[in-house]
Amino acid sequence: MRYPKAWTDQQMDIIIGVILRTGVIISALVVLLGGVIYLHHFAYNKPLYRVFLGEPSDLRHITGIIRDAMAFKGRGIIQFGLLLLIATPVVRVAFSIVAFALQRDRLYVMVTLIVLGILLFSLIGGR
Image (cartoon, rainbow, N blue to C red):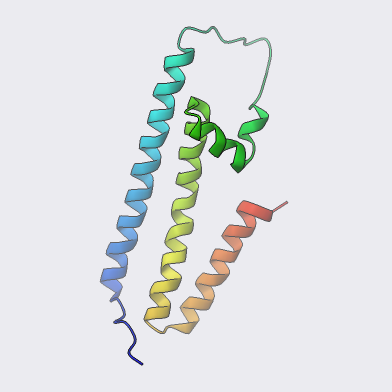
């Protein structure tokens, strides 16, 4: 059985840099789009500083954020852009697992799996 050629450390660094840059740029563009949509709808509303309303309940969960973003609601798109920003380092760590596995570096695969587990636990189930 023939295994795919492993990446060099320099190739890995370049790909990781592209992943991080792309994630940050895409999330910034999504947040910018959401900000423009939000301002288009609410630019002339006066805020009520005497009453604290907090975040709407639909924007406190991933499903609500995605639903609002698909409905082109400004706040939902902004929140979705922030989720993309949070997901960027998670994607980087997941890519590192694949890259280390291709290099057959078991120690780094195990360490990176632990890091990914900690990241996912803190994002999803860290209550």
